[in-house]
Image (cartoon, rainbow, N blue to C red; front, side, top):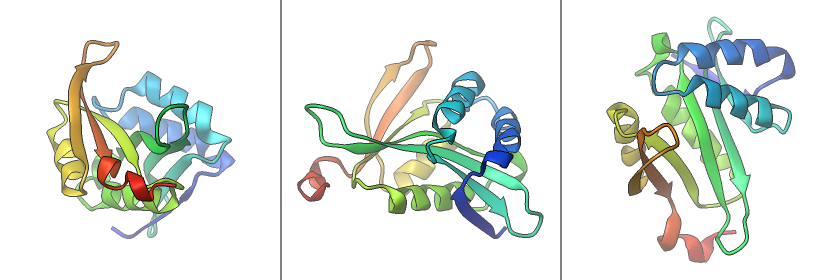
Amino acid sequence: MSVTIRSARDDERPEVEALVRRCGKFVRTYFALRQVERYYRLGFVMVAIDDDSGRIVGFNVAVPLARKHTKPWTAIYEIGVDPEARGQGIATQMIGVALAASPYKRIRLVVDERNEGAARLYRGLGFRALGVRENKSKERIIDMELGGPLMEENAT
């Protein structure tokens, strides 16, 4: 499947929210909808559009963060691909666009420990596990990072 990845437009928000709901058990729907709402107007929500049908088949929320006492990074808060479009490299392409658009060389994300496919994808892209912890919902999640100490000296 050939896709175009770009910033989501205001008129696409209902379709993005519907996709969030279809993405399944590892996209925490309530949290993802809050992230979409919070970051939509700021331009941090990207969509993957199927070039043939014009449908939105993927979304991500990637936000650059700079906080006191740490090197800045970009957090990939959410990423989801329509179940019918999975396995076609869309998530990989979306992560690539998020990395290219990031003003920082350090990227962080979390993945549900049970989501072996996503964890395998992230490791294949060079993310490394920083540790496993329980979130507020008592789910075990893996904190992952691309960049980090080896790249920090070149970080913006």
